[in-house]
Image (cartoon, rainbow, N blue to C red; front, top):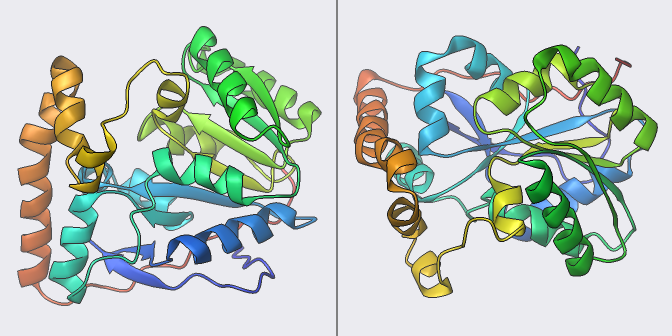
Amino acid sequence: MKYFPPVSLQPSHRDILDLAVCDFGWEEAFTFVDEVASLPIGQTIISFLNANNANYMMTDPDYRSILDRHVVLPDGHGIDIASKIFHGKPFPANLNGTDFVPAMLTYMRTPRRVAMIGARSDVLQRAAENFARHTPWHTFLPVSDGYFDVSESDAVMARVREAKPDILLIAMGTPRQEKWIDRYVGPGHARLVLGVGALFDFVAGEVPRAPESIRRMRLEWLYRMTIEPHRLWKRYVIGIPLFLRYVLWRKFAGPQTARSQPVHRLTSH
């Protein structure tokens, strides 16, 4: 069942490789998530699309179908390039999770309960502490690291339900986190759920962010690759050309097909 939350600002989209991606500006995105987090019922799940995720999506139909059920925000220069090729203009904002989630929490003036799952235990704890220093009016609840056995998933989510959060942040990396959310997370766990990738590592200071000047030039990917070359070289050296190949192939293959709108779950789970 599709459920569109009764908020003042409904998402509009651009198709990127046949996936509907929201074309919010920063202020519109903040207004949307703040209202969604305030709803008495229902659940909205937010994921982020970057070039790496798009490559997974092109070869994994299950992952694509999951993203079709989420509100998807644009993340990174590659998605802007795709938007220029498909629609003649970049997205209004680069709503990558590393910047978006801390800014979202700052924007939300109503105190929220924020549950957190993912990363190593020590990183998770430091991230919760740093979040609390950044936005002390919210309550941050480190529920579990990201290294539990899948058989423990229901028990982890039972702890989330007991915590009664307004917002749930899950940091397990793509596409694992989106698939795990789709299987184990449902209404009653939180009204707003975000898959946030490596966010806790950044917030905890485990992995440094690129200097502001490099981020303004949209070259943080290059900085990250120099910091973690063994882990990230394939993502960028192979992944970026592959992504551009998919984009150009889709551009010249014909008009994009319409994709389904985001699904916001309403029934209890």
